[in-house]
Amino acid sequence: MKHSIKVIFKNLSLLLIFTSLLSIFSALLIFEYNLSFDKITNLTNQKHIISTLTKLKKDDIELALIQFNGKSTQLLNEIDKLREAYKYDFSSNYLFNNKKEYLTDLDKLSTLTKQFNQAAKLYYTDELKKNTKDEQLRKKQLNNAFFNINHHIDSIIFKDINYKKTKFHLIEKISIVLVLLIIFITLWYRKRLSLVYRDILFLYSVDKNKKHYEIFTEEVDAIFLRMRRKPTASENPTMLDPITEINNVKGMICSYAEKKNLKESNFTGVVVLEVDNFSKTNRAFLQEFAQTVLKKIAFSISLHEQTTDVIARTDYNQFTLIFSRASKRQLLKDIDMIRQSISEIKFTTPDRKSIQITVSGGLMIKTKNSSLDDAIKKAKEILAYAQRTGGNKISQIKDIAEDALREIST
Image (cartoon, rainbow, N blue to C red; front, side, top):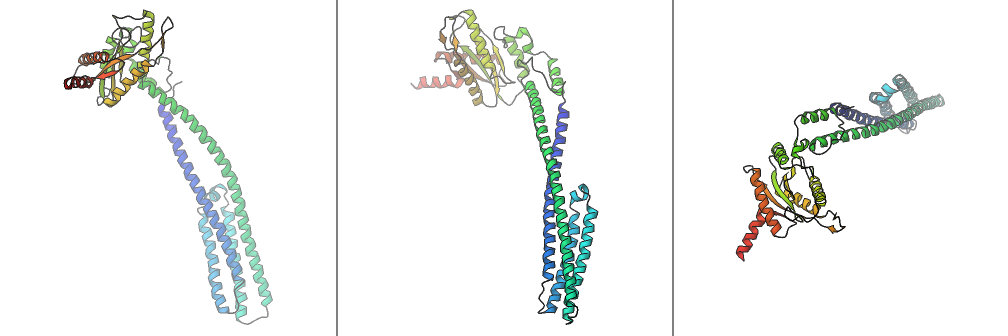
């Protein structure tokens, strides 16, 4: 069954959106945890303020009352801060749904704070009036109020810790599931994207022998079927060399006509390669061995072939290459790499002798105004020069010019 690239990328887009939402969710959790720490700090600070209210110095009662008024007002402000901060505690609001309980605890804390403030105020006011009759009673009331508010603050802190613990275990389970899910989805889509890329490579090198390749995606299958409506040179036996199974002269001309405009901005090089070890007039080896050599040379050349390139066997021991590259330097580099790879092939003759097969080549840069026949003719002239000067090398027209200048200078 073929898969749709559109569906794959649509689902991948949804996955990226999901990952983004997950990142936002993680950021909110971090923000919430910071609020939780602020809440604990707030409640601890309240306990400290309450403790200081029971320890005001009585040497100067008026100063003690001023300090008391400021700290008691601060206590109520701290409770208001807790109410405001709870609006941003999203998990408690929507996940645990403990809003009513929390606000009830804050209302009770507010009531106990007012009771404590009243008890403390009566205690210090009584001292101001120099009325010691009920001092012990008022001190006891202050201690009771102090105990009650501290106990309630401790209970709020304890509840908050329990909620944090529950929240942590829940987030831990969700995180594990999400991590496993993301790993699975990543591996799943990595495989699918790899298959999509292989399909694209198949189209990119569609002129190569990939008859047994199974196309994975619908779109590539449709494109390939559309491309196949026009027969290519490689599908027509009359355009193939029967020995090497690459283009013959007719196939070369047809393939070049199809591909010559694919990379107009590139440099096109025409190269004629000829085997140094044998020729039509010098058949140094048996026909079967010579054909084996030609097959291996053709295969070695095809390994360097790109989509816009054309390779052909155009004579008994000659191959014509039409390569398109971004620069002249790259052209020469790739052609010389082919020459070198051929020279490294190990050949063994029928009588068990190991020989080295080499090729020489003439490289001609084809201009847009020149014809293919003219470029091949000049490449053959350069090839003859390469063979005269030792062989097993790729020569260019500038090598002939430089050699001529050296002869003149000497």
